[in-house]
Length: 127
Image (tube, rainbow, N blue to C red; front, side, top):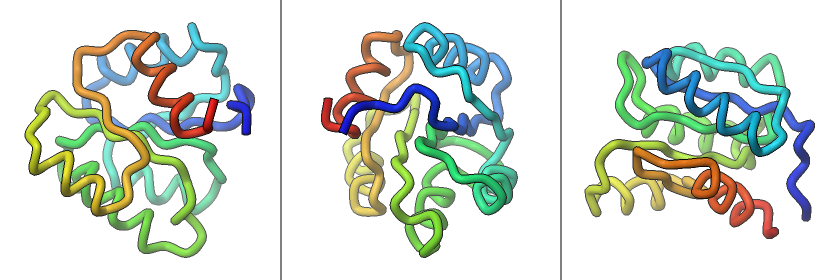
């Protein structure tokens, strides 16, 4: 299954600069249909009104963390198959294991570049 560059992508991060960085990296990779949410609660609301082909979420956010968002998404029948990439500044093994158990598709440690993001996306979509 090839990566569909027209699919809607949702970036979830409470840090505007990080959203801008990820949006620019996605643009370099050919993705133009990109939405953003400032926290997990807003992201869930958006996901219930629009179908996204990929979620890229930060781990550390308030009031709902990226990990809690991932668990909510995986528990929702309508959303459970949505590909999900977790972004974090920490590469703690227990976090990676927890995210994997919760059903994350891939994991990126900051800082990262377009090539890293592309390889993580390609891995999900079997490129």
